[in-house]
Structure formats: structure tokens, C-alpha cells
Length: 212
Length: 212
Image (cartoon, rainbow over all chains, first blue to last red; front, side):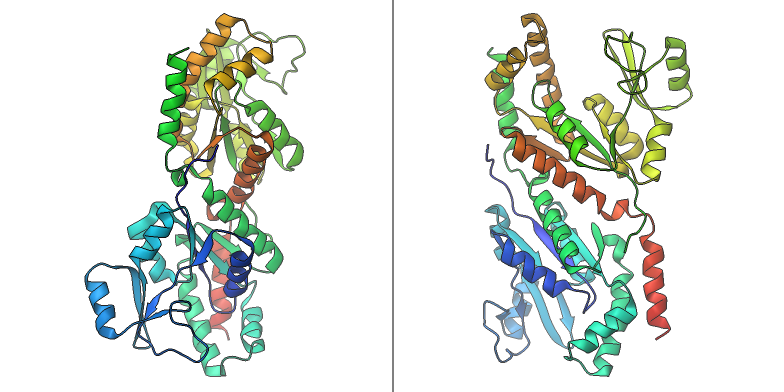
């Protein structure tokens, strides 16, 4: 019996370097019917980025207009650039039973909780230790020491909010954590709150009993 | 990283004949660290039953005493017999990270919600249709027509409470429903509320950052 279902909004958050990108990539590759939420941003496009895929690149005027019209589910300012999640895209996917992954921090998650708690499942990934997290950040050789120090400071702030997430996973094994996140998504898909017309189905069963 | 976890209290409820026993048996066979909650009852022991395994058989005086002392998580009267779930057994298992399955109706589930909501995950199984449910009840040849009619009437009442369960699954494929229930249990095991000492672990990570 396939009842129509609503999509899951899956937040995967973590300090930089704790494995969020690998886990998300893996999940997107293995799961059908799942896509990344594409944010709008006012920051300039970087080389290699694709408009509409990495971000929707918009002007500040456009951003302000959307925000003021309530067209953003959440938004943030980072280093004088603005980022936000357009409500229309997400709502349409959820309504059509398509799942959406969000790569946002605790402040974005809090805004999503305020507006769409029933649709949301949130996962926070932790590194097994800070020396290991630091080693990972140094190992990927993307950041200067100064940037790494700032990322670790941010990590400390992010971690203050662990208790706001539905699941907190310590990522000391990418395979295992990946499998856990897959299970979390699969289970969220079959939760009662995801089923769009259970009450109609139950009514039908009750009518069948009444007419025996 | 293995943090101590608390056990899951898993309620599996359904109208008679919708597959609860098969699903539960399968789950108990495949999952370690999972056991059935053993109720106390005042009804006489039947042939083949084992005291302490099928039920703890107790006198009415003993039952009343336990109930009045608040030693039961939930209790019910069915056909002048009393049934109840001793709180001590369950709490000890949960504290030790052992999961417990409950075979109780919506009234028992409501009592558990009142007392242990944080520990509880509840699943309600539905038959794909009433003719199919009736056929299953007739097929197992355990009940007279009169008893079957009563079971269907009870099913109607039970189904009124579908919205009180975390998951409502239509059991039209035992393999699939079994796999779904396994996923529900696995996911419940890793939810934040099951982790007993995450806050200590986070504190440790934060100390590691502070001492860099």
C-alpha cells in the first residue's frame, strides 16, 4: 500500500572537518528522491560554481526583498555576505514527497524549527576529538592556521547547541556514521507525520468494518 | 566511540491478526539486547505457559498492592482479569541500555506516554484491508465467528487512536514491515535522548579547544 508521503527536511550540521560533506555526498549518491537545498546568496560567484546548483546568486536588493516578503525559511549574514533558503522550493518538494538536505548552522536550524518543525529531522556530527578534528583540517590543506583557529573557535560555539538536534553522532567511522544517517532518513520517511492521508485510509477500514 | 546509552521502550500495537506477533518474533530473533516486557496477570496459568516468561502470575491481592504502591507502569482489566507492567524491571533494563518491547493496547500506551514518553517509540500496525484481516483471523482457526466479530469491533476502537503512535505502518508485506520496524528500533537507539552522557563528551571537546 503506497500512501502519498510528505518529504523529509534533513538538517546535517557539524563543525568544519567533522565529516558533514562526506556524509552528505554519500547520502545524495545512494538515496533517490533526495536533493540538496540550494540557498540564495549575495556573495560573488567563485570559479567553478554553477548558478542554480551551488547557489542561486542574487543581488542585495533581491535578497532584501525576498527576506522582507517572508520568502526565506532562514537566513544569515556571514562576513558581510547574505545567505538564505527560499521557502517556495522547499515547500514544493516536501509537498511532492521529495526529501531535502540542509547544510546550515545552529542558527539556521533554529529558524527552521520555528517554521517547519514537523517536517524536520536534525543531525549533528561531532569529531571523536579536537586533536583529530584539527589534524583533519590541517590535512585537507585548504585553510591557513589562522582560519583553522577560527574554525575551531566556531566549533566550540556550534557544540553549545548539541541538545537542539534530534541525533548527535560521533563520527569516528565514516561507514558507520553514513549508515546511521541513512537509517535516520529512512525512518523519518515512514514516520506518521510524513504520511499524507492516513486518516482517509483508517476511515476506509472503519467503513469496511461497519459494513460487514 | 561508545557512549553509554539508555534502552528504548518499543510499543508494537495492532488489531489482532494484523501481524504484531510475527513482527515481534522476528525482531526478538534478529536483535540482540532486546527482550519482551513480561507483564503480571491475575488470570490463571494456561497449559504450556511458563511463569516468569509468558507472564508473572500473581494473586489479586498482590496485583492490587503493586498497583496501589505505584509499582505498575500501566495496567488494564480484560474480561475480569488484571494485567500490568512492573515498573522496576523496565526501568532497570532501560538504565542498563537494554531495549524492551511492549505488547499493549492504546490504553496501555497512553499510560506509558504519561510516565515515560522520552523513552518510548510506538508503532501501530494496520492490515491492508478488513476483508484481508478477517481472512487472516479465520485462517488461523483459533477463534469462533463470535470471537472474530468481537476482535473486529475492537479493531475499530483501536484504530481510532492511530494518531497517538509515532509510526503507523500498513502491513501488506511482512518482510518490508519487519525491515521498517527494525529500522525504527535502530534509529531510536541512536537518538540524542538515548545517549546517556553526551553532555560530558561535549564538555571534554570544549576543554580540548580551550587548551589548544
